[in-house]
Image 1 (cartoon, helix red, strand yellow):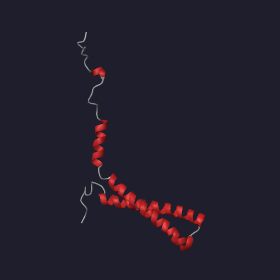
Image 2 (cartoon, one colour):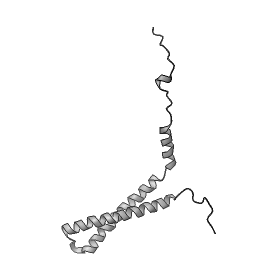
Image 3 (cartoon, helix red, strand yellow):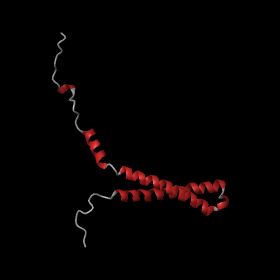
Image 4 (spheres, one colour):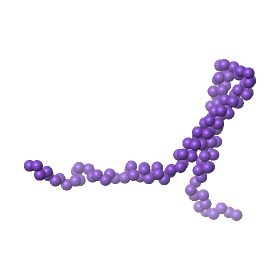
Length: 111
């Protein structure tokens, strides 16, 4: 059955953004874990676990941590889009108080 035109116009759901953030964060975390783990293994040695297990621990720990925080950040950022748009529109509107050149002059009665 064909998909009707205009279906899913709203974009990805919050859960889709959560998954996307987790994938991006996990990928970056694994790469950073590989780099830092390799440098630490070259500097201090692999220890009793061996090179592959130690490098895997660095990669898994870094990927899980960064993926977790990136997924939460993606969810929070996509949670209140309408509030941000409304605040931006309020900040860009014309000021309520008119500049001095447009106000009528009322002399004070102190003279």
